[in-house]
Length: 416
Image 1: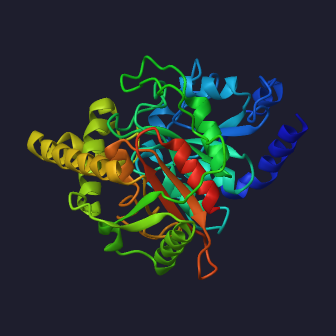
Image 2: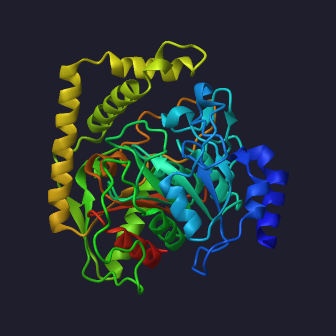
């Protein structure tokens, strides 16, 4: 366990300036005897603070939950322990998982290790920061409209969101049961895949959970050949505004795939207006969060005014607006699934921008590109890409058919 000692020492020395960990369980980590001899045995991992770990607090970044202590592990955490991972503690997140800066009232501001003073993204910002800082090689996050992949992009690490229903969500503080997913952040695509694979265990308390198909794995058995793959560049993203360095990274990734023999071409997706779909998804999640957490709305001590206002907005949205939003999202889902009947993958930037300074207004379009995978229940992997201007890394995103996690990991490895 000398490596665990070293990581705990590093966290103690360096995390005061970053704020990735809200709770460090040094005693529990040092007492852990890793199980098995698999590829994850003995590796350190951190868990987002909206996921139950027995004996540790589960705050979800909400004042109302500050003193809640979990009595048992969430099923996904149980799977990680069975794979031999050592849990170092609980990680910072945006309040209630509703936001993408990880600047959480009453809990603190998490910094991006790549540039101090900048956001690590969110809502799984602490998870991305912990991996980027080298405190852990893997971290668990949750992703409702991009909350694993956006911080992965901002911090220059890998983020993997699974197929809908693959990883159970019981004993995870919910935001939107329709859109929520438990995902993995890691230093490499393979580690992200292996970590995700470990979380795929039975979870009968999550009504959306379904057993993985026979033979499913999240990592390929052999290096992935790119020749012959059909890869679409969604036209709504081609037409969207984004930082020039991100468009250049997207172009470079497409060129590398073509050079390896893949067919890469623009594809129409007229049902998907990224901005309109993001607004519909936000309305839906605010309404679902209001239904799940009604006691938070009118209690000033329970959460920030902004969080309570978002839930109140969802509560008061009205049936007609909610049905319209759901109908729009179902149209987007159907269009994406039909498109992936003809293409193996979609390729796009992860977000329209890179990390920005804390205290500046958060761009409203942060989740415009990531949310598609949540709306359609698709797996998606975000991976870093060098930025042509030499600044913070860019990030590209692969979106695949249901249960195509191994393909995403294999293509990411080939590109890297």
